[in-house]
Image (cartoon, rainbow, N blue to C red; front, side, top):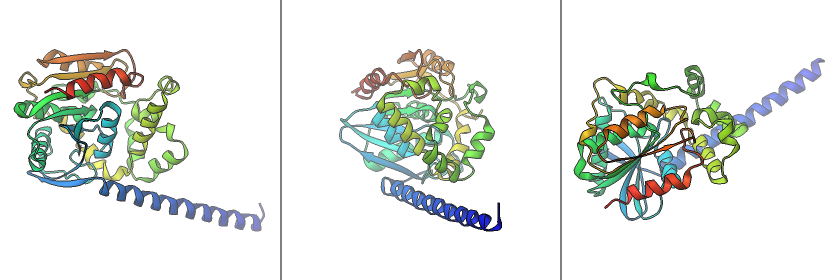
Length: 314
């Protein structure tokens, strides 16, 4: 290439980089501003906890999985819930604007949840929890049985005495580290090739091929919900609290009616976790799906009907 050609190429590359950088900064500013306006902070004994509250009716606490925040909780309520509830979606410790206290155990998370309830005047609530949200939901129900009306536990993550060795993550650890080092990689992927993040949500090619229109939109929303990644990293780093050897879970003390839903082909949280729960919880109803992966894809109507029934427990 002649000198003039290299100069033109360099100018074009610089302009393209400037456009990309401008769009990136603009998008991230918009996303962060939207997240702040969609939630509020409530002071608890373990520091500020971020929540979003909407709807009217019986109260439901929504606990998101790893990599989420209150925004993922809102999406879970839309995916598996219905109207007629006062939804309270919480950003768990370290996610978005929720603090990471010195004691960030799942027990402390449960204590913070009851502080949130007290602050907004809720005496009793059901809990909808998915994946990493399940261990703190179990702690809440065990510690505060008089304030728990029902539990819907979806694709449960491991908790003591189960270990992370039980997990078979769909992406190697180095891939997660590279993706989450800054916001830019995930931002670029969501704009150019969003399905490249399918493995992070256990969406296999076979599941992708049969997604309904609604499920495709949900997966897309979950993918976009990774951003801003850097505002979720402290929470991701705290997910190990669920399997801390010091943590104990009094499953036999949980008296609330409980729904457990898990797919046999879940590629993130193995099926035996749900079997363990079903065999130890006194009032468990277990729905074992033949497939659907971590997001329970292809079974929306069945799962939603079961969730709605348990969350409507008097």
